Length: 104
Image (cartoon, rainbow, N blue to C red):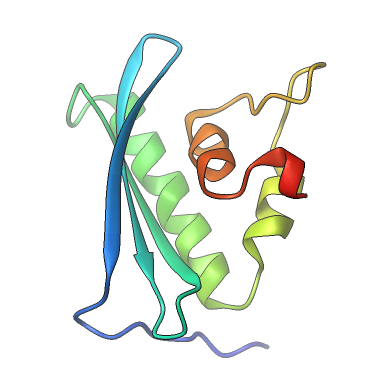
């Protein structure tokens, strides 16, 4: 089993906002000491709604995967996409903003 790379308590991060399917999403990306992405946080504009909870949980799972050594590229490749290759979910849209599909 892989060992989780724990992130320092204080770390650089970037926050951006975007809209997806009529939902306003706030995304914060935290960086590992080497500059690689180590975590993702997502919130919907309707705080504590079911969508907000599901997006937050998906971001936590993606963050844990990153900290256990799964690459952002692997996560982006694995998410559900429509027939045009566009990510189907808010977490997929967020990951595509971090790691654009053309970079895959």
